[in-house]
Amino acid sequence: MHFRILGPLEIENPDGLVDLGGHRQRAVLAYLLLQANQVVSTSQLLSALWADDDAPMTARKILQNAVWKLRGVLSRPSRAEQGPELLTRAPGYLLRVPQQRVDLLDYQQRVVTGRAALAAGEVERARRSLGEALALWRGPVLSDLVEEGICWPELTALQNRRLDVMEDHFEAALACGRHQSVLPDIESLVAAEPLRERASGQLMVALYRCGRQAEALAVFGRVRSALVDGLGLEPGRELHRLQQAILTQDPTLEAPRTAGTRERTHLAPANRGAPTPADSPAGPATAAEHDASPAPESWQT
Image 1 (cartoon, rainbow, N blue to C red):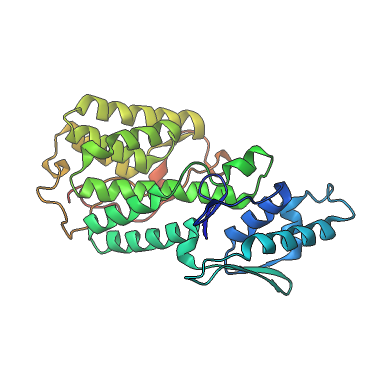
Image 2 (image 1 turned 90 degrees about the vertical axis):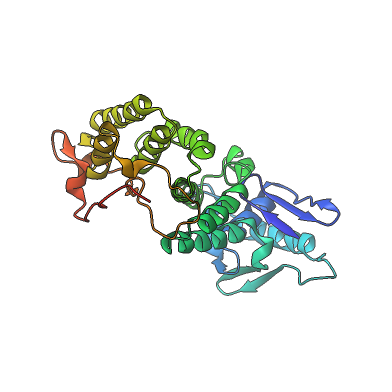
């Protein structure tokens, strides 16, 4: 069986998609898959299924029935491999399933591999691994259950971490000289997330390398306006330095001559998360004032 939650919830066996039953069963399975191979307490599951003031008196019985029905669904593994197991483990339940059979676990492992390669300067390997990880997404995580009213903080956290992985993938692609192929994806992310300085910097680099210097500088203007108007903050030091490098046509901005270089590239500011207005001082401040770490010396690969 293959379990997919990076998009609508699906289970597939050699005969096709498996019927998971009603909403409660699907929600229980989805929550257990989010914590695959870990014990999930009964209280956690009850909170995931019902708000505190909305749980019926029979909530525990409904949960037990859902688990019982899911065990029936999961009890038909392939003869060629170990199947999933839904076990009772104090203080709740454990869904034991091979890592390679859950798209979320597969995705997480590929991200770890890709980030390790990026840190080591193996940019082509990093690009492939991170790209394979992102390709596992079929839409918003558990999108079918979200449409039915599920709203778990774990889903928001997964979506936000996916944006960080996308930026890592862009960094690796730019370090491989693949600015043209990755440009549309960076443009889409920046349009959806205008406050992400790292992605905006990556878009500036990609546009510049495509011979679109004026458009690259316009990106800086848009992200600056979004930060100043929305948060009262100036862009960080690294984005200012990138703007200056583009204005002077700094040769360090040119694409690498060969792919697969082992030198680490700092193509755009690392994303530190957008600060909230309550954390910001009065008046336009500089985002770099909130980070004492040194800026990279160049944008060169």
